[in-house]
Image (tube, rainbow, N blue to C red; front, side, top):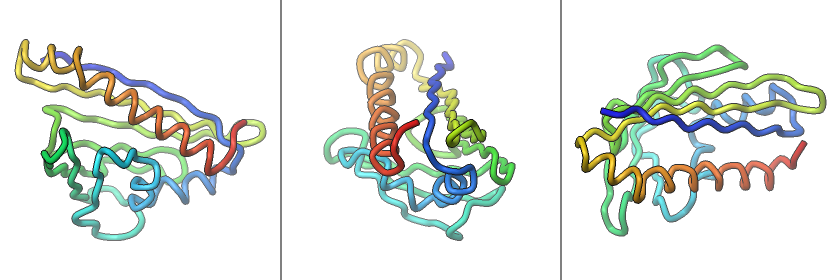
Length: 153
């Protein structure tokens, strides 16, 4: 299975504390996720994330095709970083590290995603034709929504 990488960074004119407050609440994912993904939280044990937390979502991978997505918050470094990993869902492998760093005038937020589709050559074709572009689009939407909500640095 080929492992793909998606990296993104964004500077926001907010404090580290404000960034952590927003991103450590899984409920805020809905606000920064494109509507066409049909993202819905099914099960959320607690409003603030914690290590070992299991969160269940539904996402629409194609019009009318819903799949469950179960993630675990694998690690939390309060105020600085957290990692979510897929346990069940649309990817064969998903590891997403979020980091937050104070910079002059605000915070630098970074995302590092490693993911794999499996399915051999079919997964490679799906990634080339659809999945890679869809993920870049989702994270691009996120950047625009965060800039709209918090401004830019």
